[in-house]
Length: 466
Image (cartoon, rainbow, N blue to C red; front, side, top):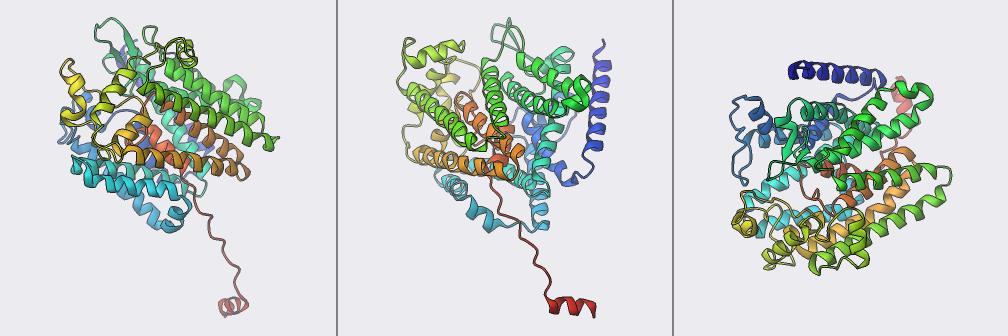
C-alpha cells in the first residue's frame, strides 16, 4: 500500500474514533482540549521536531538548538497552554490555598525546586525547566477541577491513545524514517512510532493495554468482539511487543505489573477491607526494590545474589544494560553538592555531566535512566527525602478515594504504583514535558471538597419573591 494512502486511511480511522467518542461523551468540556494538546506533545515529539520532519520552515523550530535554549516554538506553545490553563482555573474560582494545604508535601517539593534555581549553575535554564513543570501541574489541575474529573481524565487518556496508537503503527510500517530507529551498528531496529524512543512508545502502549482492556471488560456484555476499543487493545499489544530486534523488556514487565495490580484491585471490589493491605504490600515491595536498585547503583551485586537472580530472570544483565556504569559516573560528577543537588534541570547541561560520554561517543545521554537517581542529581538528598514523603503520604489518600469513585481510584492507584516502578530504570520525574509526569500530577494532587451551596434563608427567599 502506498504510504500516503495508508496515512489517509489512518486519519479516517482516527476521525471515526473521535466521532464515536463524541457520541458517547456528549457533555465533555471544551476546556479539556488544552490538557489533551499538552499530553499529545508530551507523549510524542516537540512541535519544532514535527515542523522539521514535515519540512515546514517555522521561525523558532530549530531542532538543532542548544539544549540550554531549546526550541522557541515549543517554549511559546507550552507557555500559551499554561496561560490558558491559568485562565480556566481563575474562571472556575480555583481554591489555591485549600489545594496547597491539602497537599503539603507536594507544595513543599515545589517550593524547594524553586529555591534550587538560586544555586543552579544555569539559573535561567533551571527557571525555564521549572516553569515547564508548573505548566504540567496547571494542566493537571484543569482536569481535576472539571465537573467530572474522572471522566475528564479518561477522556484525555482515551483520545490521546486514539491518535498515538494507529499513527505509531503507520510510522513503523510506512514512514520508517520517523517510526524506526537503529543501533550504532545499523543492524538492529527498534520501534519508536511517533514517540521519541522505544521506551516512551512502550509506556504509551502499556497505558493503552491497561485502559482498553478495562474498557473492553467493562462493556463486554454490550459489544463483545465488535468494540472499537478491542481493536485499540490489539494495537497496544502489537506495539508493546515491539520489533524482533529490540523487544523492550522494561515495557513488558511494567505492563504485567500494572495489569496485575489493576485486575487484583478490581477483583476485590466487593471486599474493600482487603484492598488496603494488598496495595500496601505492592507499595512496600516496590519501595524495597527501589532501595535494592539504589544500593546496587553504588555497590554492584553479584549475579549469584538474590537481586542478581531477579535481574537476570527478567532478561537483563547485572549492569541493567550498562545503567550501573552511568550511575557511577554521574554520582562522581554530582559529588560536590550531595545535600542540595545542582538545581532543577541543571545537571544534564555543559561539560560537568557529559564528559564521560562526549569524549568517546557522539551523543549526549540526557538522563540517568532512573527517576530516583535523577532527583538526587538535581535536588540532592533533600529532594530525595521530599520525594519519598510525597509517595508515602499520597498512598493512603488514594486508597481512601476508592470510597467516593472506585473505578477512578483504582486507576489512580495503578498508575501511581506503575510510575514508581517505571522510574526504577527510566526517568519521568521532574520532566515537565514527559507524559508520565503529567499523568503523575493528576494522580498526586488531592482536591479540596467542593463547597456545598447553602439553602436560602427565609429573608433571602422573601426578598427574592419581592
